[in-house]
Image (tube, rainbow, N blue to C red; front, side, top):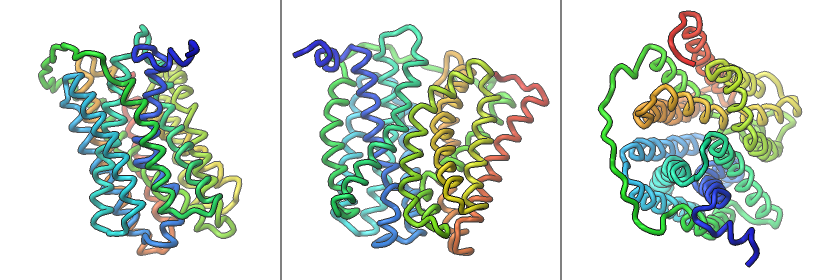
Amino acid sequence: MNMNTKVLLDKNANAAIILAGIISLVVGVGVARFVFTSLLPPMLDDYLSVSFAGVLASVNYIGYLAGSIFAVFIKDINTKVKFFRIGMFLCIVTTLILGISTNDIVWMISRVLAGFGAAMALVVGSAIVMSKLNIENKTKAMGIHFSGIGFSILISDLIVRTVFYFNGTWQFSWIVLTIFAFIVSLYSMYILSFDKKLQNSSVKHTIDKKLFSPFVILLIIAYFCEGVGMVVQGTFLPDIINSLDGLEGFGSFTWTLVGLAGIPSCIIWMLLAHRYGSVNIIMLAMFIQVIGILISALTNNVYLNLLSGILYGGTFVGLVALFMNLGGKLAGSNPVLLMGALTTAYGIGQVLAPLYSVALIEEFKNYDYVLFVTAFIVSIGILLLIFTKVFKLKGE
């Protein structure tokens, strides 16, 4: 066994911990959530309606929201490991269900449980990574960890592309994804655990109402707006592109670009925030996201629409890290409460957006109005943050 292999099998090696964390995101976020977007065009051709796809996206985020809130209350690290493993198991089983069933009720239950599993993989898994890393400055390492969201989109999308290259179906894609997720998750579950039970005193935090200053309340509302901005393209982007004149078939390629752009975005945005201030960089990223959203409503130019995928992938992953990092700084000794409030607001935006999207698509028979409304809501988030600057509300 060479040195590199030894390191990658060492539960306490930082390289192994980060790799296991990225793999957990590939399974939890890629396979259990985002590959649904990748497979949406063939599923729409064969089984799903756009309205049912929107409902499935919404219930998936209800599961994710419930899991994120539940994660806030898991104090003990050994319990975190247990629920992380339950989450990974749910991600795998619910993926298999989509490959072997076409029962609408079963699909809805499956998507709720997949959302809960994704929250355990992302929220709880990231907390385990954070606690296991043995380095002084964990911010850069966590930036690398969250690049796993970009990898999750790219890797799951490439698996789907490979299946279709060999004339596979969307059902067979789900089965292949299940096998892949099962194999790689074994590594994550092995590394992201402890050799013996850890004794950790559960620190009781009182709810400090002073934490919710006018600035923090506006920040939470802005993150709700970003939740809306994230989920519309995150659910429908390939179908949005395919529905434009002359761009049929470009949807899947655009989605691949989303994954590629998402990989470095977290690290780049965090570096910029460190240099120019979090609020300034959040506003810039949200503005770029608005441009990306509007492109598909205003033009069917192939290059601009491919750019819309890059702008989406290049902003939404980074914005999660930017908001969470700022929330953690503002909260000081009690980050769980503020991060929980931010995640809840984001989650509510994610649940609501597919529902109004479905209503507008059914009314107007295209995605234009969905994109205009979404861009408007994200713009409100930017205006709220400008307001905090103009009135010099205390933030960063």
